[in-house]
Length: 100
Image 1 (tube, rainbow, N blue to C red):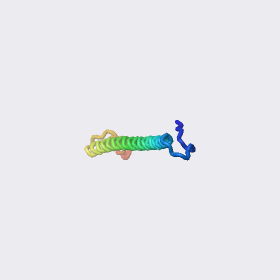
Image 2 (cartoon, helix red, strand yellow):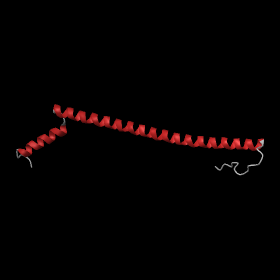
Image 3 (cartoon, rainbow, N blue to C red):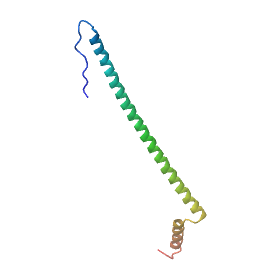
Image 4 (tube, rainbow, N blue to C red):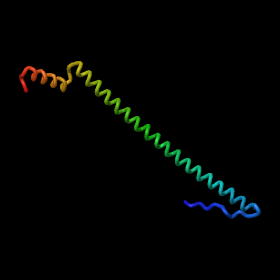
């Protein structure tokens, strides 16, 4: 959006209409600067929200993985983990020469 400001229309006499035009120019500039600052602030806030959401997702994934590994360790120590039991039995059978 192009904004037309009073720039080179300075008259020798600072009359009221020209003064009002200058005031209007400063109000326009102020509003444009405020709009830019708001866009920057909103963008930063969006970035922070995205970072927070990503961190929350990472934390949930880590908690899930930690729970899974803890469950696996518990099954191994209790001797109820089928995958580990199969590996151990297979290793023993190979060691004894029952299977190759």
